[in-house]
Amino acid sequence: MENSLPAPWQKALDQIKTWARINSPWAIHYNSGSCNGCDIEILATITPRYDLERFGIKLQGSPRHADVLICTGPVTRQSRDRLRRIYDQMPDPKFVVAVGSCGISGGAFHGCYNIVGSISEVIPVDVYVPGCPPRPEAIIFGVAQLLESLKK
Ligand code: SF4
Image (cartoon, rainbow, N blue to C red; front, side, top):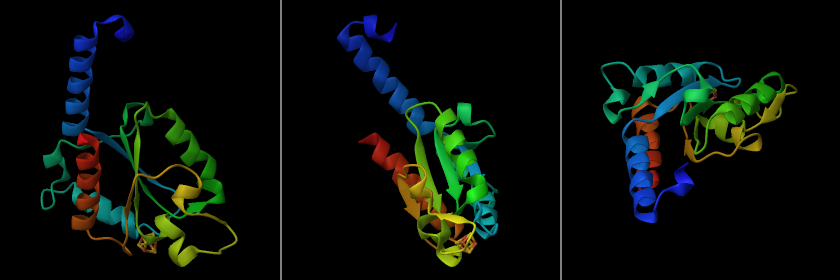
């Protein structure tokens, strides 16, 4: 149906969709094998003290409704297929934020028998937030960088 719109209308519709996406991205959080340190920091970002929701971001549970996957790693053999499935269930366009050194490189778990590796070895990653664990400010900065890149 969108393809049948006149070009100026289609352009306006695309601009509205981009505006809505930037101002109210829905995010899903997935732990693909981290020690929970990064996950606790992610949860801290949605508390009133750090208030991630001021960017219009809403954490919710279904990948089918999510624009952004906030993932902590490393990726274990057990969770590799789940991570891939969650990513595949998200509608396009979709974006991934890898939080923590383990998600970026395997970190402290690099080389363990049950570890596949970093998140980017399983799904494409758009933003990396380093740290062990990264502070809530760093996670918010990473998400803000992602939203800023969407404007372009
Ligand atoms: S980066 Fe640090 S806090 Fe995060 S999962 Fe790895 S060891 Fe845990």
